[in-house]
Length: 264
Image (cartoon, rainbow, N blue to C red; front, top):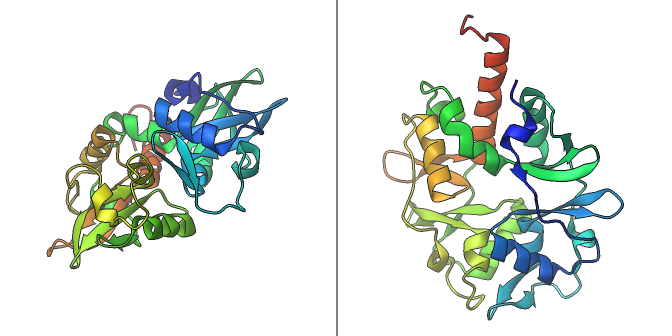
């Protein structure tokens, strides 16, 4: 039986409710993490990078620039109630819960020992998702897009409104790449800079007939949270997200548990 412990990111960095968002942002960027458990006499909540970086960005190597001076300024004020999982919980039971929250704090005898997120699931999808599953059967809609010439601050505001970390860049109706919240806050210059300036590396995309396993491996390799699926003209048809991959992994593990000998 596969457990949460097998998949979680162990020994997470934690913060206190009174920790400033500026310090939290610095920790996230320096350590390359997306989540910080907030602890005080137990689990207080879970802070994610969307909550931190939709509030402000780090500029000039560490100066905190706030978008809203009246917004939350501590981890306790910005975090969300945490989904708590036991390290020895069965993954087939845990993953459907994870879908609702995106990430969970993992406990062992009451102590915080890990964080389990969709990012961890994507990392192993290449060995769990059956090769016969196509992108078309798993990809979702709508595709949240932004024009390449839109100002960075407007793109961040759109991410905040939608509650997402990524937007598909479009130029003249064609997919031009993907931009993430981390791309923008990690290379912040001027809030009016066109968001296309921050796009993630090379253009990574998929076709509906591609294998979902291959798509998930590409997402993990390039550390991207979504993969736009192109139509025949190169426009955005649908999108493969980490949540879509998580659903496929959960289904594969459930089927394996139901039919351990491969029988149906």
